[in-house]
Length: 444
Ligand code: FES
Ligand SMILES: [Fe+2]
Image (cartoon, rainbow, N blue to C red; front, side, top):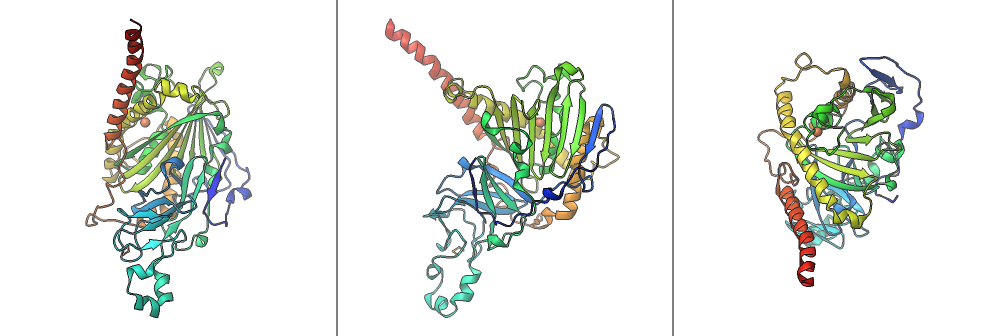
């Protein structure tokens, strides 16, 4: 596995002092709980500030600027002259313009407003271009110090691009203190061998609360109901809703819930893992033997704006040629777009109800099977109190909304990609039909 890193070397992996010393065995309507954390039950190793997967490495090509945001803060990713990914605040330190409309020249980002150009380390490399020469000459050091890009640590690993988000971008990457380990997010560290699988990936943007989307992905019951007609699995539909034996575990790294069929012969149905702050893994069966797994990354773009990247790893149909022939990628995209739009109205209404204060302790009831969701909210609320990420770059209704809709590139909010995907399916089917017809015509 390749790993390119421009994160500071200082790494604090708190797991190392973390031993198993506490175990609760109980049975709440078929649920077994196990707490292997020495920290208070609601504290995982990472809070809301930490490592987030932002996009796949292929989606960041040399020469391209990738705009997004985190907790309202506008950011941009690009590759420097050595092709290493950089994550900077989308604000030129000369006079505060966005880099939208800017370009990359030999891996240096150039501001569209006055042409300010910045090296990978963030220094302005053409000060004489953006100010009068005599000012630069007389007060160069003082001036140069102020014109500097603000950055976040950025690492590429297993085909993902991660940033270490703290809400406080710095001019020097070495000044970051990394408090959580990126390894905690790695499915390889939970018994899953990535290179035995092929994968397809889909990106979706939602206008709703980020935390609610994660809850949705930890909710096993809704899959049978709302997605029952869409998921191509005979075990998952409205008719077969069944109850499972559930085993829940949480330690400093993650919360895990295993769902076993009640009949022992059938074994494990699904294992769910929440890897804070933004990753959910869903394994069909045990992580070691799963026929497929989904890795879902959740990115808190802004208030009421969130992005999800879902990667579907599978053991079947790994051959690229065959995958292309049967249009597997396009058909997968079609299913995912549909699944996410099935959730969308629910997520938007829940977000509204939450923000209006309707969803309160006595107004909604988590049931026995929702124990994992309860654990997740425990973590979320304690992290929210501790990290307060939404208070780092707060907006009000008077704030200009220029950045808000910019990153909403993916369905269901924007159906352009769904339409393109559907057109591609039809076109390819026609081409596959035309070929044998043409052949027959030729023979005749
Ligand atoms: S604002 Fe960017 S160069 Fe002036
Ligand atoms: Fe869903």
